[in-house]
Length: 160
Ligand code: FES
Ligand code: FES
Image (cartoon, rainbow, N blue to C red):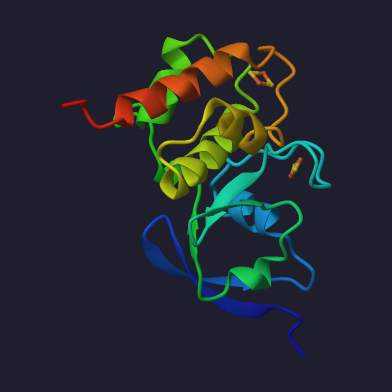
């Protein structure tokens, strides 16, 4: 008897089938599928490195069983941008000097993307609170917050 199971979900805009093992976590499925932009840090839901978007919400893929992705819409950093089509959040992080080793960056981008989709006018406090689950051991956070404030301000409608 096979112990694997087939699930289907939309990954970065394409509906795909995946064979999963019992208890397999979403981060493992993504990475073994070649999407290694999603990072593994703590593997216990505390660092944010593995953040992806599921149905538009920021989710920690290291604690989400893969089977829960069935029928849902999953976006990883590969679906957001790359060298040829840099997402505004990625560009803002670069411009603010908020990327050092870069290990936290994909998760941070996914977290910020979900925040701005829900609340394009996020306050400075909203930005700090929303990203406090994305640990960065390099930057000291100030440059990250600056970058995200710049994204928000660039999205503001022009004043009449
Ligand atoms: S690897 Fe998922 S929260 Fe740290
Ligand atoms: S840039 Fe190194 S952990 Fe954030």
